[in-house]
Length: 123
Image (cartoon, rainbow, N blue to C red; front, side):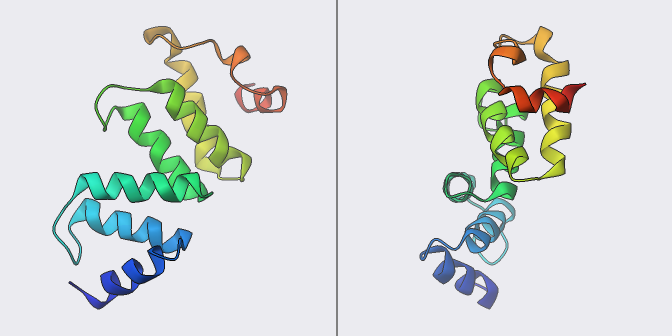
């Protein structure tokens, strides 16, 4: 265990968003600890639910790519919208990708999922 991992772990236990995200990254990549994707996703999800825009974006990417099993595009949209509402520019790009591929997948049309103000992202 590296010193950085130890400090990320201590801060994550206090719900520090940055530490939760970085600890998740350590688990995903086996940095300072054994690679553990289950723990990584659990921590990333917690950071996202607590309001980390970066973690919300990463969760959207996981769901969009199907990295956690089947593609779950509605979940990807949900997390992407949260990240976008916090001003993360990458979220706009991912939302566009999701909606460009919407004909290939079974998801609700975007007009019924996005609040009106988000429609400007897709114009």
